[in-house]
Image (cartoon, rainbow, N blue to C red; front, top):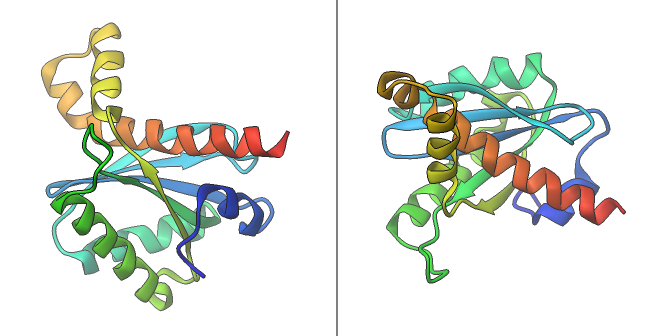
Length: 161
């Protein structure tokens, strides 16, 4: 049962493991990391989306180093609440992650999170911080991943109460 809801993810995640949030686009893969208590998401890094095998090679040591137990992947949904071709691409990426469990070093739990407006929120935040265009371009994907992951963590905390 590697594909789960956010609620199931909270229940199935091994204790003191972290979640890795992902903002997947055709060009970039933004990453954000939770703390072990699953309360705070922090922007982590950005990878080129390029070849999936290269992504797995970069993700495997991160997952080991930070004791990652699962992924929260932003699912592109249009403003009407419908999935589209990008959604299919993200679902395919998640399926590939599930099949890559041997290369990742663990059997990941994966949950999707609606990513509507996360890039806009990240850009607005960076505007408020006075970042240059170049700085915004370098950070937007990891910031969007943090917004995606934080939304999932907030849902998990609500469910805990």
